[in-house]
Image 1 (cartoon, helix red, strand yellow):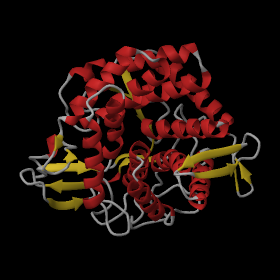
Image 2: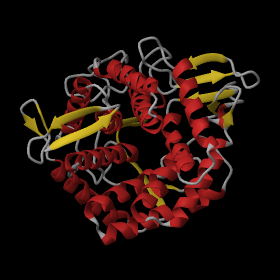
Image 3: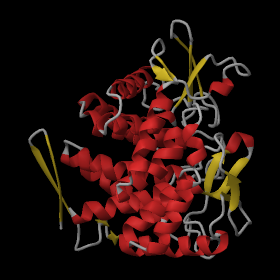
Image 4: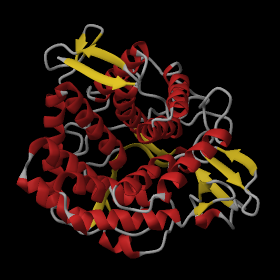
Length: 400
């Protein structure tokens, strides 16, 4: 089976073996892994039913999801309905469709509030966005368009970025702060601009990406989790790595957000400067990975190899690289990124990282906020979301 992508007149062809992609001497059965996800989702639904709260995590030693109420400050609220939408896409199960609608609909109170922070994309595009993509429900579409307008109210044209954490302005003296996670929320702005929303949303998203590219990265392509700008004239003040080990270290999930974010920005703009930058931030990540392609929570943490691994970073990156490989204009790079993504998925699908009978999540061994001692060696909903997204993207690519 051939995978082809036409970019700037260049035709790339990458071969898969039958219906199972192969790297080195190993094959990866994507359908088997999606069936595993289905089984785990069924277990989760049997335990939580039609709750009005969202599964957030399963901590080390626990067997059941910790549920959290739907509230504006719960940034992970959209991932569980997003997982259900991906499962519905792959299985066409009416039971899962009903669950996806239920858990999407209970997010509706968030859709009418002013912007609390940048996480509206995570909350509403992972849920309503996937829901609209699969059902065409016009109510979902209008919610996304409204959410994009709300998110745009946090854009500061002087700084050239969206304010990520309004609540951190005073206590930390971060007058205009932007975090790397924010790159993923730009996708909702691009989508809205292309689907009946304000065309200026495209410009806001692109300006944010350009400014972040200029100020939030070190020379080698690694990034600061947070950059602080002056509110009045927008000048760069400092870079901080809030959830990593130290300001100058490479926090794994932050780098994964960058890889995913700039891949998406290139897809939306087709501006080659973003493709070249996506390669740069990817290459510094790949060259420092351990043998199993699942990173330690921070690449510079002091006690490697005795530091926790972060399966969530691997899942985010695998999903991004499956897309980046298809967007590439260099066949050698496309193969490199495809092979790296497969190695990540093979490891994540192994007993070392699978939840299996331990609990009803997909993955073990993710890290939320290590400096705060939060969600270390845990199953976390966003790790599962990007894992099933990566599998779904891979299956679609194999069929093209």
